Image (cartoon, rainbow, N blue to C red):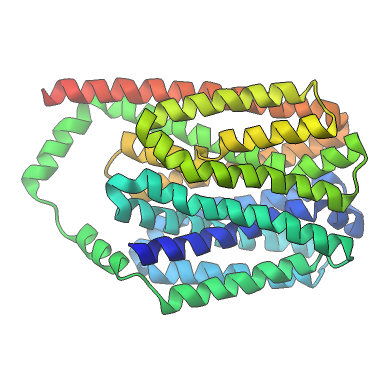
Length: 403
């Protein structure tokens, strides 16, 4: 298990670096290509559409080729696509390659996430929070690295750095493949005891309608959450440039503050969720986050924006991993499929909402874009309250039927 956590952390660190590289270099990139922010959002959208495809395809690929081939192929794909980005191809080529890059992201996150949830079982909250810390660490390191490269006129080298680390991650997984995955795979394929199946059918069937609604609302949560997070981290530097007159390199460091808070928060998120319950944790953190973004509409100075950004990072730090475990426990028995659907929803949100935000920023400028972020925060709170209520109702129905 320790080896799986180590390799999963390495993979998530790489994905954190890779997913933040576009946002980090957004300002110099749009100027170098002579495109608008909405066009930059288009590239983000293409990557996340590819990610959605990867997450949806992951369960089928695992069934068809086993666990090793899809993951290793995804890591190679990321390494190659990032190297091509660094060559500064024409903008239409960048847009065409975006879905392939996203395909690698989606396959990597979904396969590794499902591996950890299945293998960790009752410790899934803590295990997922631990590897999510490394996603945050990657997202934290990239703006620092990107800022230094931008300041020296080497912004394209950001893509080279990600490519090299993706190649190193591929080698690590190839040489150190966790044996626990082979044993858990074999056990998962073993035929279930018929009496056990019958008990499961009797337990789940009465609440099936509620369970379906719970899964649907959780899918909506992931769509809004990932789209919101990606919109904020991709356009926060642009807001700081336009509102506060910071340089491109200075503004890119604002993302590092956000991801520092995310990384710190993820160190304790799993313990907090286990102590207070996943639903209570998610509702309270979504409420804090919504308040932060509402305050950000009225306090737009450098210091106030950075403070509120840090608090929102702490609030959002555990949402992804805790919501993933929450949904899998609310809809038991189909971990790989549920994980795939939730991450695919995140891919849709990550594709559409940054595109919407880029268009919004071009048309309505930075002040109204802050209100757009506040609206996303309020919507996220409403959705998780709905999901928690449905999950509670489904649990009560199951307890009654078991009695």
